[in-house]
Length: 272
Image 1 (cartoon, rainbow, N blue to C red):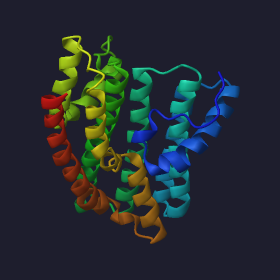
Image 2: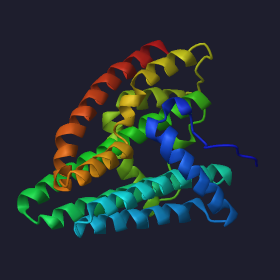
Image 3: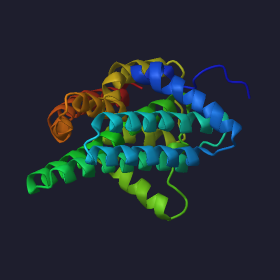
Image 4: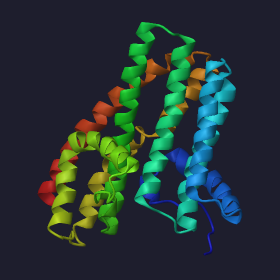
């Protein structure tokens, strides 16, 4: 298989930093890992290790070094997905593992910040910020996956997992936020899947236009802007403000995105 550049799921929905930094660099690593015959899950595990090491460095007040490790973990996170497509090893389970790795990385960051300030007030802030982080990531993943599924007319990512194992339980918990916050779009998807309907080709541009009108705001809920927060706060030597950044800035962004997207979802149900 010949590859000439970074592999994007769809460039229209990618964040600026993914297009110009994470994906190009991740692609170079994906080619390298492909030659070593590493699997995408191995690369995901490497990403998790660097992310956890970043958290440990935060605990030891080595914030700039921590940011470098966390950014590299995100490069590897981009690399595993591109490696999966290069090697044709994509799967729903791969997506779950990829998402789980992100949760573990941020959990290490949150715990490191808390243990630098082990107070009850900081514990409460950590829990609120951590739950917020999880909800943001779930909504971010859902709408990007839904967009790609509708455009490609492939809905396997929304099919229930067949076994009842650990990953299936993780997936059910992960998608529980989505069932509440994204319910109107889920109704739209379920209607297509259960009734074996396909969107008319002349309505695809309507769906695409409506979704793209909000997608860059949705991208703000992804890992990039949390990592940007860690980096900026590390530079000014106030990484202890990270919980406030998530709670008071990212949650305002989240509320804006959800309100705006709910209106779009209702329009999609009625027009597409």
